[in-house]
Length: 139
Image 1: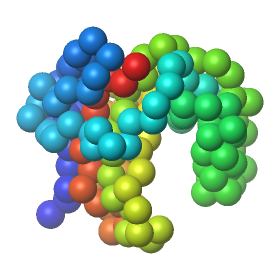
Image 2: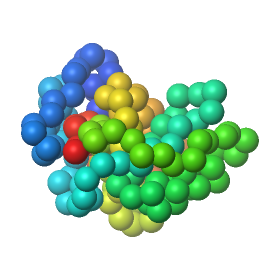
Image 3: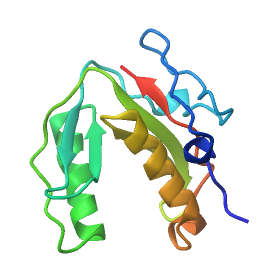
Image 4: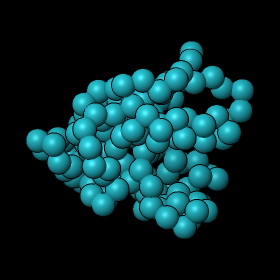
């Protein structure tokens, strides 16, 4: 049985509550509020010629996140981290490999749901990345 957020299948819209996180309309749990970094604004990278995108609160965190993706997905080219939108769409999860909670943010809501569902459906990732939340807007 796969652990799915169910958001893509339900065609759910994401819910934003004035700068705070909110549960998704598809009923999945909201991202862990402790994972939301302090600050304002986001820095984002994107895959050149593809759809993979990610955002982090600071330029340094974004660059480290981008570098991890480059190691994970060899042969893929990503843009530099640039100042992104004021609001991004995020989900949280527990990474068993590293023994800690983490989060993923994307600049667009549908990318967030697609990323969460892709992890939940991937036979390798779903073993190490568990307790995947639904997506919600973070400012």
